[in-house]
Amino acid sequence: MFYLPVSLLLFVVLVLLLPLLWLGLAVDVVALAVAKLGFSRDAALLLLVAVLVGSPINIPLYRVECEVTVVEDLASLWMRQFWGIPLVKMPQETVVALNVGGGLIPVVLALYQFGRANVALILAVLALVTVVSYFASHVVPGIGIQMNPLVAPATAALAAFLIAGEEAPAVAFAGGVLGTVIGADLLHLPEVLRRNCSGILSIGGAGVFDGIALCGLFALLLS
Image (cartoon, rainbow, N blue to C red; front, side, top):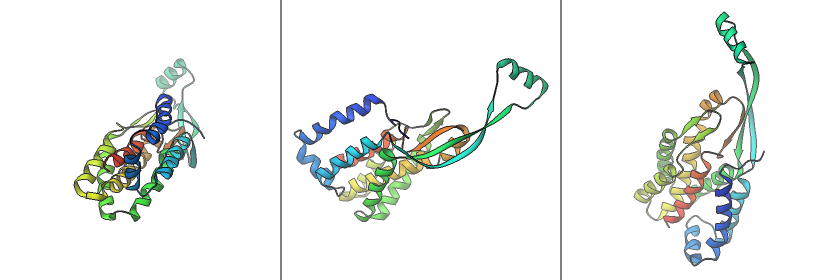
């Protein structure tokens, strides 16, 4: 299952920025920053490419069957409402999937940080970002989950900066990514399934992909 979780323009911009990040004047700075997350410069480049390449790919996890009210035409709708006749319901299904670039890879990298930084600090930032992401995101019928992409990364970066010291990059990254996925996607899952009863729901996909990607950028800035 393939679709872009971000606009085509943003996707192209991110791709064009790759050589600039690694061949520009800030090579040493970038290398130091990604080292704070436990990766070499080359490994970080490969992971970034994997995120971009994996962003259109969704792995189906399970399907949820539901019924959708079907209206043949306005005349039929009026007659049914006038006589109190129930509307016809047709079976539909929603596919719940995991986005590779915005869900699978960032979550695995975030879990990797638990072995490199203070777990209690990560859990504290994770809890804060989860709450903020939940209330900052909302379900848009027919579209999915929408959230300002700066909210979760800024919250994670600020919290980690205040409490984590030298471990701030790893804490901000892990807490920001996992908190965004849990707060914006997983906790809204029942509402999305109730209001959007057909199509695909991509965890880490459209609506939250930008925020998850920016969690990595903000973590690097903390270095």
